[in-house]
Length: 177
Image (cartoon, rainbow, N blue to C red; front, side):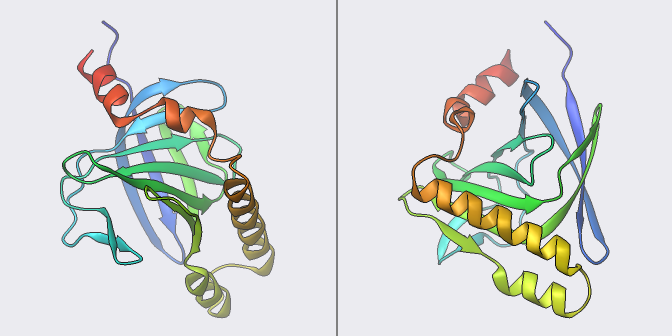
């Protein structure tokens, strides 16, 4: 049996917030690294459009694409029920072995389990731009990436197949070895 592989993800939120996430690597290819979160220790559920996306005890499966301007999370309730696909728009992750660095660019794309696609947090990006926390060029790049993902999702060409291939059940089987 191989040793457990982990990633320490330094996730910066402008202007000055940084969180470090310790996640188990369950699959790795040149174009994608799949990690499993720790159970969420949220004080309150994360709601999107009034529906629970994550709650205390939830697990998320994360898909990091080196060189890409987004990552993808498969979100679940604490009982394992899938709630949707969530993409953070971010700077391309700098992956240096087990230590990764990226910066959140405010916008998110959400595909709820019931279907549809929506762009989230445009107001947060506008506020960050207004307060000088992000420059015009970086904001433009974030908007372009978000619009591209929404258009691909609406055309049923996104997310990539690896996201449906790696279910929470498959990741948990991999972890249990």
